[in-house]
Image 1 (cartoon, rainbow, N blue to C red):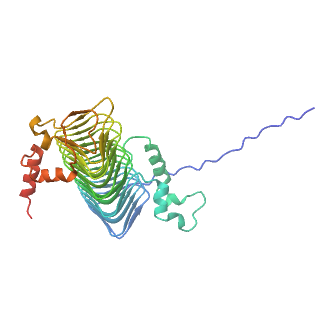
Image 2: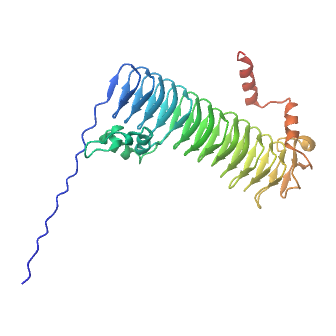
Image 3: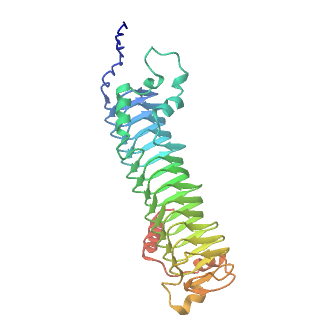
Length: 365
């Protein structure tokens, strides 16, 4: 006779998460250092000599000045931001200008931020706790994890300009004024600004849009490029269309892997020009090492000029005459420097160039 064995259910105890701490509220924050594992609301300016560390969301109704800022949640500043380094977990929203001397990084995880602060190297913690809890309260951490599924993660928005040495953003960057950066390491979404100047490379996974000129001294990679001014780069690679109201100047390769290149004025480079579809320019197209387009498309130059001016301003020049040349006159042996020389003699200005020139002339020296 067999014995019936009764299964005994083991009771698993799940540690209860304590309620989130009340938000820290103060009329003005002036400290050498400040840290909070929850939310912070400053009804005035925040002046921190060294580090500002916030595990939750931070709202500052004024200006923010600090050496380093670590905010795991959303950082909202109604005024200007002036810091050396800025690390954000979720969204950065500024009502004024953003000035970062070194690195601006969004999309930081709690683990990365805690290790950056070397919290894992401190003394042993109470049983059941984690070194990350020194940065953020468990209830706030659970709230952040829930919000990761929604849009806006890692975005940067500002009503003023943004200057920084390095930019690493996991979301979109939207500015009402210009962007000045030493290098754009990564933008996971779209980039939109009044003007863009980057001293190094620029890597944008989405659309790059500028209301005026774009000047990138290194390489530019973007899904699509829309420039309502002149575009100057070292080299340019885009998955989609490249469109400029003015000129496109490069010393390296220009390529649109799946789209077309369309410029209101001219396109010129010391290297090659390639587009999967059309290559269109209002004036000349010069690719010193070659020009090629899609097999069922074509190259159209001088589309804004009478045919009598094609030889001087609507020319197409490369190592050999490109296939599928639909408009413009092939002129052998022209270089990028020829276009630069023509630009110095140019008398006519586009409408948007006149406004910008007048604005520059009105500024005091």
